[in-house]
Image (cartoon, rainbow, N blue to C red; front, side, top):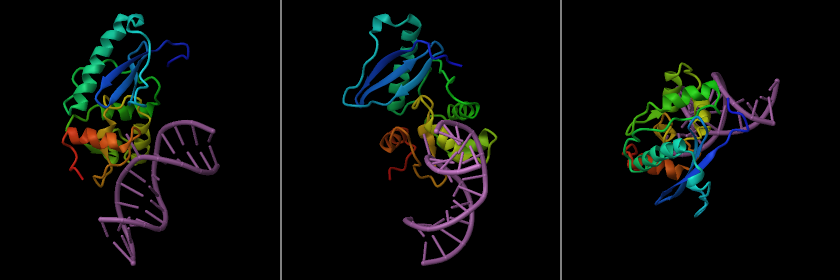
Length: 170
DNA sequence: CCACGGTGGTAGA
DNA sequence: TCTACCACCGTGG
């Protein structure tokens, strides 16, 4: 459980598509936000960030760039799931098993975690995922092999899948 | 209890 | 293929 007083650290990740914003708790990476405005990137000066967080961030930056390039993420920083419900954590853990280049349907994920009829709830759990890219919710498609939805915007989902060569290309 | 989704499956046109 | 409809389920109000 995460108490409200816990301190968080935010660091940007510049990319050709804008700056992602990573947020860290004492447990690890707890959120990874897509670039917002042209330049909404801002946070705490690097010097005020604990060494531990800086080393985690190094892993995050490399992982994000890898995924954006369609490569396997590589070594990930510890992920802080604490904000999720039991069900959501199960879903996220399952998503983490989907390797680059693979895709699954919401229903398949539901079956994999022992809730065969919860496909729709799985979709909701994907939407609640605060660490997209590293918890690859973009690799989950509708059963008819169509795109389905994506909280970060379908353009992103399409782009990521194209890079991973997991999308026919419409 | 109710309403709402990043669903899935079926039936018709 | 596309639309309409409905069963299903975890979450949040």
